[in-house]
Image (cartoon, rainbow, N blue to C red; front, side, top):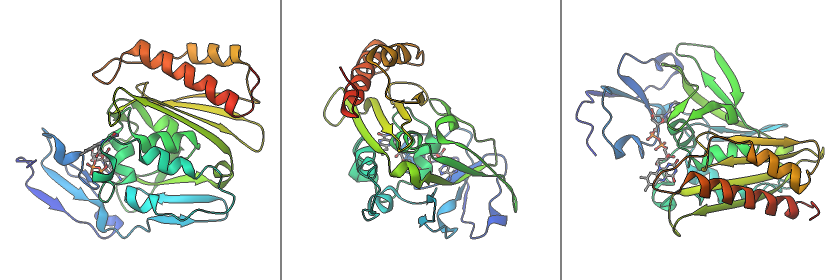
Length: 270
Ligand SMILES: Cc1cc2nc3c(=O)[nH]c(=O)nc-3n(C[C@H](O)[C@H](O)[C@H](O)COP(=O)(O)OP(=O)(O)OC[C@H]3O[C@@H](n4cnc5c(N)ncnc54)[C@H](O)[C@@H]3O)c2cc1C
């Protein structure tokens, strides 16, 4: 779609140039930005020429730049000991009409669009990844869990002038056992709810619910909970919502069912 109010697209190549005049917003792959009218947007600042290395692996983290495309993330070869790595493909395949947008849609764009069905949000939140946020200007950054970055549908923690620089996945969590469940109202439909469970080497168990709730919700236990404990925790969630892709009751019910299935899958007793 033509964004008829946009007068300029700037393409910074250095951090100093990453500044936003009133009415200017960041541009990642543009797959969401160009899919609907953007009232009040007069300029785009294309982040994709900044030369950010898409993927870096350090001693303790997998660092994925915001401009890394979904296709690049998916091409990361299997890494020894990363038993959670299948989650990458599971989440990427959860995007509606996934393969059509993989080559241009960016990881940062998906997270910053902040839709409940943001599958890279599901991935990053479930692995307790950290969002690295740049203030406008030559320096300065802040960090926060991705699970807390999204506040509601289409609303996140970014202040005007801030950009998401990268997502850092702790390697410890990539070595965790995980389980995945997702449902949509039809085979290629938008996610109705998506539940990921993670069992760490420390014994901690984390259930992350996205898609069915307006923001990521995490349920943490020191060890595998009983069915009753888990059901009570899921029952305490209030952020279920109703739209064309499912009713709040259905989302809550399916999420409870999935959480219990994953509890058993990770070794819980019935
Ligand atoms: C066929 C189709 C199916 C889709 N299915 C889904 C789906 O199932 N789930 C879903 O969540 N989305 C879906 N989308 C929407 C969108 O394509 C994806 O969310 C995609 O990942 C957005 O990434 P992008 O790089 O194209 O973002 P853009 O369109 O470039 O940007 C999206 C938003 O993020 C902001 N932004 C981008 N990068 C940054 C950054 N680094 N820092 C700060 N702000 C930034 C932009 O200003 C804009 O507000 C779909 C789109 C299409 C066309």
